[in-house]
Amino acid sequence: KDIEFIDSYYYNKLELTRFSSSVGKFVGFTEYGVKNAADWNKDASYLSAMKAQKEAVCLNHIQIEYNNML
Image (cartoon, rainbow, N blue to C red):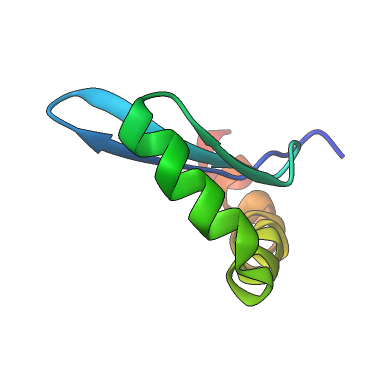
């Protein structure tokens, strides 16, 4: 429940766009990022793929990462 998948896009140390699994969509932080986020949010298959990343990446590896930390 407490796991969140975040995929951020940066250029020149400035965050342009971010996908967050808790929000469920892309959010833009600059003019260019807002445009990209709007385009990516319109693509249902890409948005579904990003939402599935939480299960594919985070949930399958959390126990391994947790054990390595201990």
